[in-house]
Length: 230
Image (cartoon, rainbow, N blue to C red; front, side, top):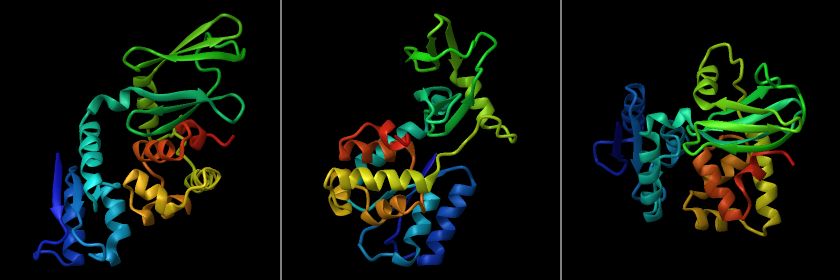
């Protein structure tokens, strides 16, 4: 369930707005906030953005983005699908990104059939619920997203390794500058508020996979180039 709140409504001051969106989030809803003025609620803007997980509309372009995000977040099966699977920058690991944005590092051997030979191909099944890894020895390994999702939700954290926000932000900043773009231009191209881009680049906020993909596309690089420290 999603709940839309108008920050400009007379019923809200800063504390009341935070209480309303916090209550919605605590009940398991997806709060969405619509700001109608640039300086509106400026003192709590960062907190609002954190609670709403980026679901904040400030410009007309935000409406389509949020609509797409709502549809995606209400797809309960997305955590059981792969978004991206690749060899990790660290030896002996596979990096898997699930449809809900969680990043998971899986150490080899992945299964009993994994003989440790180099991975020469990775492909996703038609529904992205399984990844097929081809090894140099000719062995093929099948990795199921549902299994990876179960592990990343366990308290042991056996497979769960979150994306390093500061390193990701630094890579994003480097790629943006290499493309000759300012934060203001990147904000214009993506519809993402410039202060939010600054927070990501400073490592103070780790964006969702959807947001990261939009930023990467606007810079002109694949999302994997931002995620992986190449």
